[in-house]
Image 1 (cartoon, one colour):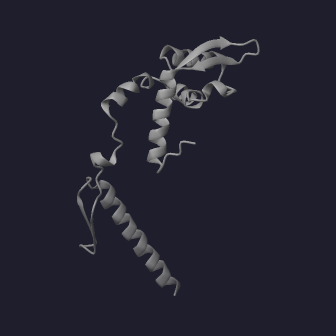
Image 2 (cartoon, rainbow, N blue to C red):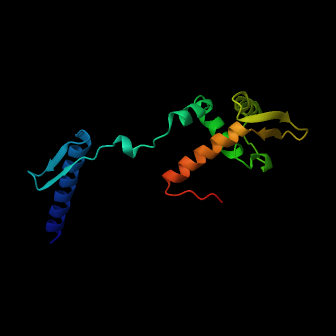
Image 3 (cartoon, rainbow, N blue to C red):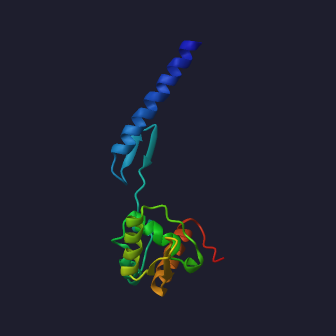
Length: 151
């Protein structure tokens, strides 16, 4: 009985291995046939309609975000929204990097950086441009996740 179970497991592993090799080496849209046609299907392709379509004017609006590094983009997503002026963000980033990040967002018109207060907190105001971009990013993200809740 044990030998039969081992044989079945080996056959399953071999079948899965053959399928993985065949599937991942085939080009998108190719016909996949495994075990002499016992299993057949077409490998799915990504069509242009599957991708998020953005109007060219919106792509131009996103221009200020293109050269931000991940740390700066992360900061913008936290503080750049409509209520950004109301948040207190405790930035644990080293001071020289934090100031560089705030100044970069300011240089791109996404926030107005006002420097540090006497307690070392970074002071800033959101800009209309920053709020508009932040809102557009959030709408795209929420729509791609299946819905947009404006609350």
